[in-house]
Length: 193
Image 1 (spheres, rainbow, N blue to C red):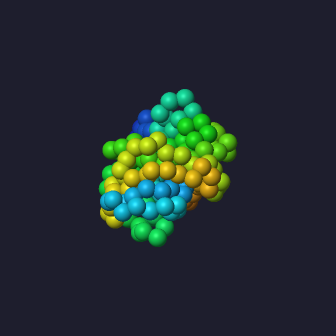
Image 2: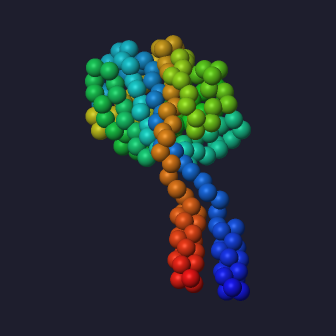
């Protein structure tokens, strides 16, 4: 019996030392605006650009007061009438007070939308789609698999921002370790009987 009590103390101590159980969830950001510009020198006017970015909530980080960013696993760009392609650099989504948008790791912010509903958004909860004003910081080009996109102007209205959080739960390493400790405890208990 003393061995069993000792084992219980060890299991309790190990479980208290393990990191707390945490989860992350898949997330998708959809950001759009009507732009004019060119793709590899071919000029277009007033085409809807839609960014779809995919990642998880575990990578959301602060970038200052009221500012959050999420480095994403992948991102696609659809430019109406021209095509759809993958971003060639790592994409990210961001919110900064009442502005949200996307960019890539090479050129930083590419397109942003502005709406009061973005104030306080944490990038980890469902939001929208919300109508928003559109702008761009004038950087570029954005490299995609269908060509390099350069924005020359945007329509100030007609943008949108949406966050869709999935329901899949991914266990963190601490959760897995705790599960193994529980299985080991059951095996030892059975062996002692």
